[in-house]
Image (cartoon, rainbow, N blue to C red; front, side, top):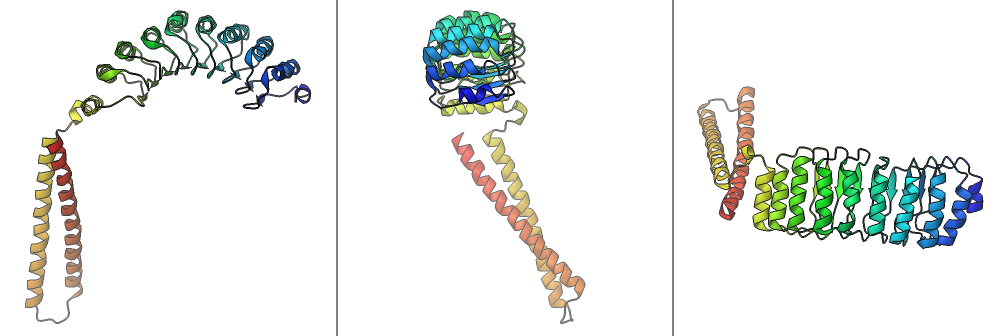
Length: 344
């Protein structure tokens, strides 16, 4: 494969996802790929690169001047490997999209990532499913405050805790470019949730936020939802697997529905009851009209109904059927309103 690729000088995209190539295989591959200067997308995910493969990537990446997308996900990369890879990326002026998820990156990798962010080139970074602790995010947070290139950052499934959540959220408060952020499953509690609320109150560019699988608690979730009332940017909020009690469900409804649209169960019951009475009154009019028609028919000396009288009869019959359907629907709506009123 490496020999065959050497002749492909115009190769732009190479996807070798999940092939079990291993470190030695990547050494051979990258040695032959160094001449493919038009390569923009390289996916080496799920190939068990390890330290040997990481070293090969480190030597290869700085020399490919058009590489914009690099996927090294799920490759058994250690924290040392991650630090070296980030250093190599700092010496490549073209990489914008980076995936290092599902590895064992930790403190050293996070610190080096913060340094790489200073160059202002990365647009999309996925560091989910690693072992990055909250204490190591100071450099990332400091750079993120003024970073204008990064649009998407995934730190889900790490070990951020409240310390990391506070650091990241404080940085995002003043960030003007980030649109997508995931801090899912990071052991964030109500203390960290408070920082999320403050971030949402201050930030106006974030459109998607994933805080699922955290232990935010009722006060934490309530605070986050309250902050959304004045936030007009967020379009997607993922709170998957965060327990929602009946009390929280009612708070969510009141927080997310504008106050002028909130209708109490009592008010709704009164409205549908009035509507039912109106529909029943109109249905009574159709019954009376039908009775008058039958009386007129009996008094008529003609055995055969005129075309006009037949058309009138059909109109009245259709009117009665339509109105009967409206009455049935109004009764059904009142039953629902009665149940809601009982629950409230």
